[in-house]
Length: 293
Image (cartoon, rainbow, N blue to C red; front, top):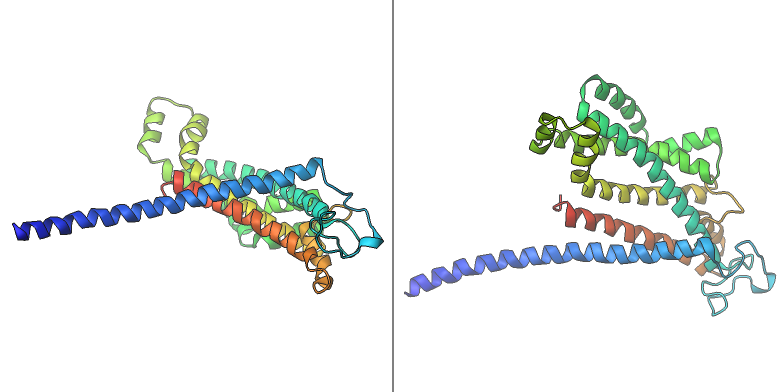
């Protein structure tokens, strides 16, 4: 009896440990998704607000309030020209969102189409398009974008188009791998046997099954676009005046870090929170809906 009781305790303890590990993992996944979603919604809400309303003209210079610390009148303070930092952060974040969103639409849209076609059909089409893709992928996306901008010139829409083209290879390769994995699945084979059309197989049967991984990749791409746009604007080859840009704000404020640190802190903090929220949301989507793979 005593021996049997000990054995039962040993066996009963093990499932409890595994259950606790599973619960902890599920809690972390839920936290990533929930916190990321809330933070992303808040940041995007502020950015959308900036499209319709800002408390001050972003280019209005007031010599009497140069480098004023945050206050009720200017909650993020003012810069070296007396411009309201909060208004400029909202406006600059709007430019960042527009460029990053446009980058994903261009790079993701074309990359997904190329990846779906090459991954599903294979053969000479796959070989030809992937060789072109490999040539483009040999260059880091930011370097490829810089080359394109050096040819076309800088500006909001040119940066968007350059980054979109530079992001095509990475999206194409990710989607190609997912479609190659799915094309041999039983549900795809069954769909072929009953005569389902190829476009329907691609976009109704396969695409929903890779959606978690795809959405996660899109959030990573969005964050990369945000970082690269900010970097280009910081170097002066991205968004040009009079349009505000978070990267340009960081560049202009570095001379005044001692006398007006808020000029750099708030644009930088806005970038960090936006990237953090979108990144955690993407990870949460993959963990919750993609089985954690």
